[in-house]
Every structure is written in C-alpha cells, then in structure tokens.
Image (cartoon, rainbow, N blue to C red):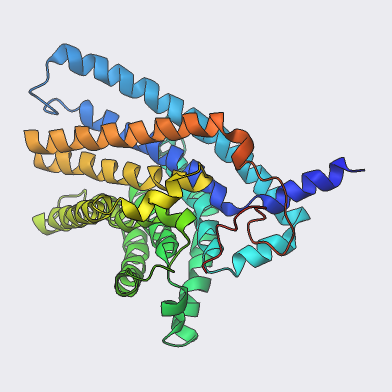
Length: 368
C-alpha cells in the first residue's frame, strides 16, 4: 500500500524543468548534424590536412548518432513520465501551467522533439514529406497554442504584467518560435516560417528590453536558477539559425547580414555573462538539474558559429567555431557524467500538490 503513494509522489515532484536535459541533448545532436554537413564541404577548414578531416568526419558521425540515440531514449522516457503526471497529478500540472517560471518550461518538450526531428539521421523529407509535416505539426501546435496563451496575457493584463512576471526563462517561448520557424523553413514553407519568426522576434524585442531593465534585480530568479541567464544568448543564436534557414535561397546579402548580426549579439551577451562568474557561484555549490541550463545555450551558440564559419569561410571563423565546439561538447559531457553519478539526487523524491516542482529541499521554480 505504501508503494503506490510513493510512485505518485515522484510524479508530483517531476516537472517540465527536467526537459532541460533533453533540450541540451537534442541540440547537441543537431549541432553535430550541422557540423557534419559543414565538414563535408570541400573547402571547409582547408588548412587542416585531408587525413585529419576524414578522421574528424567519422568522429562527427559517431558522436551525432550517440547524442541522437541518447536524446531519443531520454526524451521518450521523460515524455511518457510527464503524460502520466498529467493524468495522475493534473492539479500539479495546473499549478505549473499558471506559474510564471514553470509555465515557460512547458515549451521544452516541443523544442526537444522538434530539434530531434530536424536532426534525424534519416532524411524524412526525402522519405516521406507527409510524415515529416505531420510530426512537425504534432510537435509545433502545442508550443504555438501555449504561445498564444502567454502572449495574450502580456497584451491584455495591463502594462505592468510582463514587467512583474518576466524572467530569463521567459525567453524559452521565443526560442520555441525560432525552432518552429526553422522547421517550417526546412520544409520549404517560407511564408509560414516567416510568419512564425516575425511575431516571435517582435515579442523577443519587447521581452529583451523588459529583462534588460530588470537585469540588476537580484530577485529575477533564485540563486539555484542562475544558470538560466545563459538563455540570454541562446535566443539570438536560434534566431540567427532561423534567419539563415529563411534566406537559403540567397536572395540578397541583407539576409546573411541579419543572421550574422544576431550571432554577434549572442557572442556579446555570452561575453557579458562569463565576465560575471559571481552570478553563478551559489548555483554551483550543489549539483542540480538546473545545471543543464548551461549546455543548451552553449550548443545553440556553437551551432551559430558553424553557420557563421560556413558564411565567412576564413580561419578566424573556423577557429572560433572549434573553440565553441570544444566548450559546448565539454560542458555537455561533464553534465552527462555528473547526472549519472548523482542520479539519486536529482530524481524527484516526492512532495505535495502545493509545491510547483515538488522538491522537498528547494522549490527552484519559486521566484522570491
């Protein structure tokens, strides 16, 4: 009789924030697929000997399949667990849905599945475009519906509503826009992609200004969630990738210039954050699933550097790409090792329906 309540309490403690892990792994899979396409180009990193490039290409393929397979397994498991939570712990899900931090992570499953779809080792667009479109719709519609709800609140609940609820995790909704737009562009639905990109970018400008004005407010997020500040440069990184996908037809240098400008913005914001290590000091005292918030933005930045190197074609861009790749992959591997070694600490051990995240120690969703 005690076993059943224990299992249900685990569902109460489980929350959408755990999808930080799958966002990171899926973005790593897409990163390596993007890198494989770049390295297969005849002129890519031309100053590196051909033999080394061949070895690197095989390494890319191995790492890509590794990340994609792990991502699929973890994402499937977490998705099934969250569906079970929705059925058996719906009150907890409702609290999460109405929480100004927790609601933003409800975009994470859609982002993870879309990234996994775009990084599929099978060319689904060639095999069955209908299947690809169907999967894209299944993964995109929940995100778009949630965006309508959240953006509608920003418009209709008064001028101070966004200022009161805005926090770095609010950018996840904009990232979802960019990922959806990029997927639509990959299907050659450019008008649809441009529509999604347009309203996403408009809200990004509003959100960025709001967050910038509150950046010195130490109460934006609790110290345990300070890794989410890395989302500041993840958003323009994905916007750069989406813009690049929209302009692959090469209809003018302005489109390429826009993609570069967004990548430069992400680099600038990355530099601003790493120049303030004290901001993250307290969050690093004890391992937490929130640490995975470091990996996803770094993967996005690395993908932007690959796109930039492909556009620029010079040694500086290649070296920048290699540095960011090493940092991104290194952080992800370290987090994977820490997660395996500390699995017992990050698995939810219960809680009550009064807790948004159900964590018995620290409610990491609560902004004091």
